[in-house]
Each structure stands twice: as structure tokens, then as C-alpha cells.
Image (cartoon, rainbow, N blue to C red; front, side):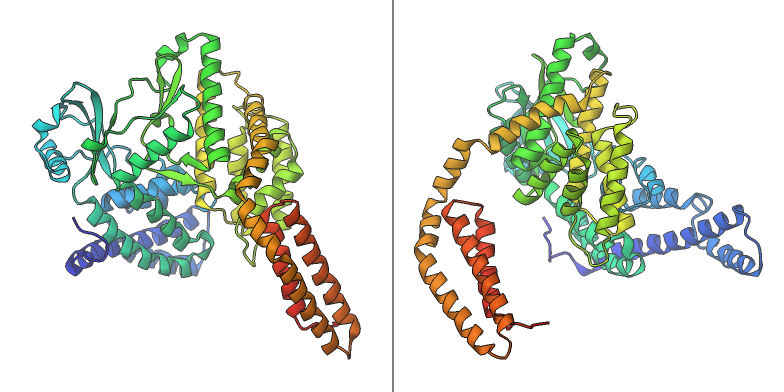
Length: 544
């Protein structure tokens, strides 16, 4: 198995030659498409004549099957020719409507969803090599026809020796080698694209792509993800994740429980009673809101194909290789954003949304907030799913970001995809489904849990040792800080006002931080205030 850093140079050179050829062909094809678009718009003159002449010679270098296609179609077809890595890249990029033009996003959604199957003989060899045993000693039977063949792995139905029905998910041969080679090449291409098209943030997008995709080839990670989800939802037995058979899993093979259910679009679900449909929708809301805003650990490739309705009116989640993680601050901001939208507090929604985007010097935060508020007001006039959904509102708000140089983390887009799936499935089950009504109850429950006095008390008790240590050192810290303030004030005899201003401001920060610490306030805040007080004290004042 080839790992990162040990890929033979000739393989990289060969793959690089193929990649560069398609990249140059795409640039030439894009130029031809641009000249043709100008001609169709009615442009005239000598400049257009020269451009058409250059385009004529460019056509000679482009595949005749692609030369007449629009640029987005050329891009999509070249990604398919380049293979699994680039198909996966296009599928991920199809989510980035906040960065890429709509015409490209729509074309990327036509990328191959089922790639060529790998012969079962190769799959069997991988299983035996990875697990170190003959198939006959592990499985009674394996269906040689795959259930699915994606860009990275292929799945087969199997039965263990004790007749348990399972799913075998096997990483395709050579895919790791290919991913690492393409990662090296695309990072070089991204440097050039960053200079050429900085607005679309190519370097950041490429890094995000490989950060997520390289995790998907590690079957052990998917096993860990499944167990983490199961632990997070152990209090809700009707939300199900497949059990993992560790003794039959390895680095390239994952053996998991077969969940016998039907997808949400199955026709027989229309036979469910209204009460059963409401329960399914409620379970979906509970799962999505808990993943996103409670745990900060969510299914990042959620679509109807990865959802199952199980007997007994239960919901199952499968294909857990791609997960998103939200840190505490981002999760808190997104929870407040969702709550503000549900409560139709659009001023707060715009503020919380703008705080999610990493700050850029060129960002127009004020203009962005105004645009988001206007968008929210338009949404309020037509809040039905057919016309506008909360997920679509967030997605359109994120898409507005590029116009104001506000760029959002990929987790934000993956979160919206999960919400879109939930709303779409809910509307499929019940056309009268109102996401606001269903979400309000679960959001309120989550707020009650997070701000429950007993929970806050337990959190305070967990922090008690650190707090006591900080309080024990507080007198020394305050004393030393005041001594520094006094010395600095004496040094500023030529302008006592400046020294007094710094002294008062620094003292207020120190006192506020001490009070917050004593009251068990948020530790990042009181530590920040203490540090700020010391820095102000050390800063040589400038009366201007």
C-alpha cells in the first residue's frame, strides 16, 4: 500500500502530464466558449475578428467531442475523464454555491454518481489481504454483484458464518495511491489558480476537499464515526446507526450491520398514517438539530440515499465516512442563527451569520448584513417550502457572501446540505410540513438543555480546580499588574493624562476579569480581560 511521501516520481510525472493536458485543454476551451458567447451577443469589430482567429487555432488543439460544448460541460466531462479523484472533487464543489457560479454548480450535479465496478476477484483479494484470512473462514456468502460503486469504495451484501446479514464496504484498488498523487498535483495547480482567480479561493477549496476526502479512504475512521453517532444518540433508540463488526473490518474493509429499510422516496411510505409520518419528521428534526447544534458532529454527506426508514417507524443513517465537525464557538453561532431565523429576528440572524465568516480585510460586513436582512424580509412573505425554506434561506445568504468578500467555512455549506435534505424529506412525507413549527420545539429543548442550571453547575464543578488555582494566584497577579501600572504612570510624567487613561482602562479590565472569574463566568472572557489589562499596563501610552 503506497502512502503519502513514497509515491514513485514516474507515476507523479505521468499523472501530471495527463492533468496538465486536460487543464490546458480546458483553458483553450474556455477561451473558445467566451469568444463564441461574445459573437452571439452581437459584438462586432476588428478585436472580435482577431479573437475569433485565435479561437480557430485553439479549436485545433481541443477534442472534437468537447469543442462545441459550453465551458461548464467541458469542465464536467474532463473531470469524469480524469477519474475518481476529480469526480469526487466536482461532487464536493457542487455544494460550494457560495463560491462558484450557478451555471457550474448545476453542471457539476450531473457528474457520474455510479462509477465503473471493480471485478469481484480484485475485491476478494483486497478483503483477504487486509483481514489476513481466506473468505471462507469469515463469510458464508458474498454477493458478487455490488450494491453500489462510488469513487472511493464499492459495497457488497454478505452473510457471516453465523448467518448475520452485513454490508462489506471495500476501498477500490489503487485509490489511495491515486488520491495522494492527485493531491500533490492539485495543490500545485491551486497555487496558479489562486493567482489567476483569487475570488473563488481555489487553494482553500482544494485543501478542504483533500481534508475530507483523504479521511474517506480510512475505513477505521468510518467505523469510529458510526460508534460516535451511536453513542451520541443512545437516548433516542428510534434513531439508528449500523453496528460495526470490528473482527471483520480493517484498513481497507468495513463490515457493518445491514439495515433493512427503504429510502424516504419509497412509494409504500405513503401508506403510513399521518401520526407515523409526523413521528418520522420529528425524528429527523431531532437528529439534525442534535447533530448540528448539540454535538457539533454531523453527517456531512447527507442526501435521501443515505437515509432509511426502518420497520417500527425508525430512522437509519448510513454511509458515515464523511462527517463534519463544528467547534464550540461556531456551533453556538449557528445555533443562534437558526434560532433567530425560526423566531424571525432577522437583525440578529444577519449579525450571527456575518460572525461565522473569517474576517478578511476586503470584507464589506455592513453591506453584507444589510443584504441578508433584505433577503430575510423577502423570505418572510413566502415561508412555504415550495417557495422558500430555512435551509434555502441560509444557502442564499451564504451565496451572497462572495459578492461582499465574505467566505464561509466548508462546514457551513455541509450543514446547509443536511438541512436541505431534512426539509426535502419532510416535505416529501407531508406536503403541509412546516419546518418552523417543527424546529421551534427542538431548538427550545436544546436551549433548555444547554442553559439548564444543573448543567451549568456541573460544568462549574468540573472547572473548580482550575478556578481555585486562578483565584489563588489572583492577588499576586493584581498586585504585580498595579505595580507595573504605577511605574508606567510615573514614567509618563510629561503627559499624566495618557498614563491615567491606561491605568484606569487596565484596572477596569483586571477588576472585571477578577469578578467574572469569581462568579464562574465564561473562562475565555475573564482570561481575555485579565490579559488585556496587563497588555494595556505594559503599553507605552500615546496621548494622540
